[in-house]
Length: 239
Image (cartoon, rainbow, N blue to C red; front, side):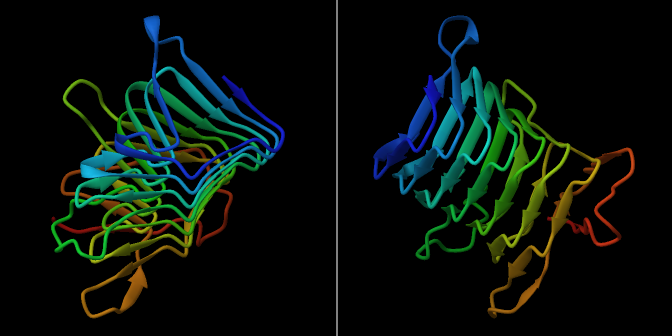
């Protein structure tokens, strides 16, 4: 499926997974979805006892964002909601290129008692592969991993490779990982930047929170980070 020009997918609602788009891979995992030009997936929602991928749910195949494509203002409205913008799982590969943006999405409901159940405001990697070559992930919100949450499922290991682009101005409420929450594989290289992300604690105070490593987890830096001395910040605190 090719989505280009000024095409828009908007104002859709799903109970469960895939408010705007649901891609399960098809026969042999050959399904593909490409966004290019000024295409937008925006203003979609998912709900239910557990939901994910209010904008895009991909559990197989290849999903690619090019040019000025945007996934924005999508919301996972569940006490176990995840992947407000994008949910990548199982055998899916999701790639960001060009000036693509994932912004203004959320996986958070104000009625939720703090239990670390809402994750991946911009992107939830729950198995599967997420590759960010360029573009931006910004202004997303969640309880954990407001920009990107990287985890595993029972059948596959989640991986996030950040070759370029920026993850900025994302915020977690009460939890950890304003920029990236690392529970699985995370690699960063070249001019990639993870900065100016934050955590709001129970008193409403904001503090810097860019990359959060759960107990015993690490991430890999490949080559020189050319984004300057403030291109990434890491916190490692026991959960």
